Length: 246
Image (cartoon, rainbow, N blue to C red; front, side):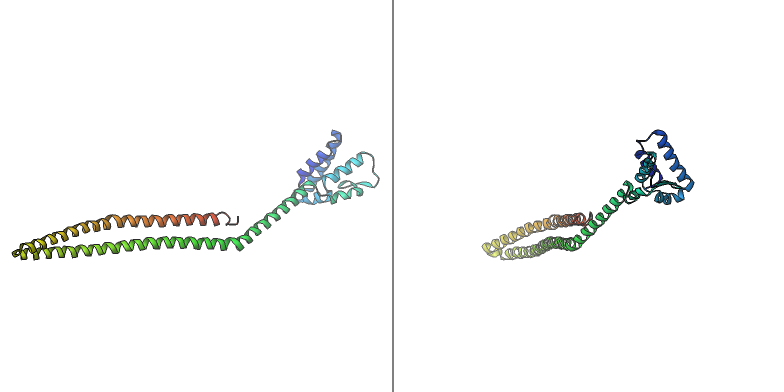
């Protein structure tokens, strides 16, 4: 409570008095605050008491019932109204409510932190472990598939060399055996057949090396990136806005 609040409350509580009486009372306490100075405002408020007590004392004095009361340097004083000192004014009540609300908020924050420590961190660790395991499993499968395909393509390239060599050898052997036309023609035909197979396998190997492998590499990279992004967003939702328990 401050001086302005006190005067406003007192003016409201004295609204049932005449304007002259109300003005005189308010001016008295304004002068008293001014004489004390801003640095003693809190002390003056503590000595005067609540606006309710002051208003009750003034009304009692104006009504002519002055038994037990007297005029002092703090205004009219009646010990019968000391009970008003025990009644918190609205400013004090608001302060107490705010302190109580602040205490409840602190308790709620501590409870949330405790729940986070008990349940949130283990749960988050489990989810993170499962997420990383999933990423590792997917990456392992894709890496295994890529390595398997690479091995198959290398084997295909070796087979192309072998078929080419075999085809050339059979053609040469067939030409040499042309003294026996049937054997010679058979050798030449088998040789060209082997070369055809080598050409077909070479085309497939080239397609695998220059088309399938880059595509598989891009697919693996994109898949791992998407899974890592999902995991990162999950972690952000869990811990970036107060934790899993919030």
